Amino acid sequence: MRVKLKDITKFSKGTQINGKNLIDDGAYSYLNGGINPSGKWNEFNVSENTVTISEGGNSSGYVNYMNDAFWCGAHCYYLYDGPKNSKYLYYALKSQQERLFRIRSGACMPNIKKSDLGNFIIEYEKDEVRQEEVVKVLEKCELLIEDYNKKLTLLDEAVRARFVEMFGDLRINDKGWKYYKLDELTELITDGEHATPKRTTQGIYLLSARNVLNHQLSLEDVDFIDCDEFDRISRRIIPKEGDVLISCSGSIGRCCIVPKNIKFQMVRSIALLRFKSNINPVFAEYMITSDYLQNQINKSKTASSQANLFQGKIKSLKGVVPPLELQNQFASFVQEIDKSRSRIQKSLEASQELFDSLMQEYFG
Image (cartoon, rainbow, N blue to C red; front, side, top):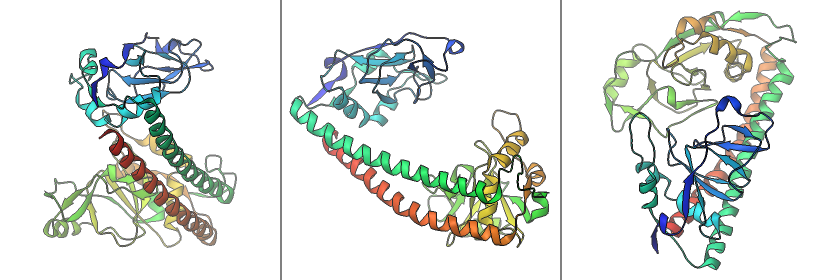
């Protein structure tokens, strides 16, 4: 049956705490809207097993579930005196996350009005036995998803640990490597197209900084260009397998290698580094994502409304050159880890698809 939220539960906003007064070792989380708690406090004002909905800010409308007692801030709604099975209500609302985002009002500071939230309609099963069945199935799916994500995190940690084991902590250079500017280690450092490319709805990939993640390209939100535009841009630079890409605008410093069998061009928010033959690109990629290089990158970014990293700064960044044999050994290790990561990623995607389909089946 379809019901208005105000007909099955009550909801209210919490009480604000000055962020400066939060306690690092507080016993309870402080949730003031947002996606995650923003600190700790020594008291709670809302009990455990509670559904929350962010009231204001960029995340207004975000549905959360607090397993433990917490302090709710003034920019967050908490639901109370509702269904006995609060987890079922959480799933019913979470299934409509995008619709909740659309009831926001306000431009500079989006927020969700209490009246709009109360009139929000969801699909709701009154049978408590059926509610429990639905929750059990969905919780099992979420546990699978969580487990696969943990395994991926452990693989990432294993690679980072292996890097430090083989090359040391580059911040203190305990292996005693000689430092070189990246300009000395590369054949080419350049960036993408400066003019505004003519985009199309399909064709050849046109990548920007948002498509460069650490150790992978993301093609979920990507632009396209046609062959003529590709040829025009390619007079300047053609990305090759093994080139290293760095995001240079917004979230700067993310880094990945150009993989096999992908044809693309890029805009100026991406830098391209082509390393000399004594540098394995996989080693270079993980060196750039190490704390040592990331600290340099953060110090080199421009101070403006949107951070930028320019070619001159990239050329001045300093790296090391361990023996190529050692670099190759590390690259082989990463290759084996990537095989395991690929298998786990496929299982994760299958579990997420199952969860999404079940949410659609149960709540429409």
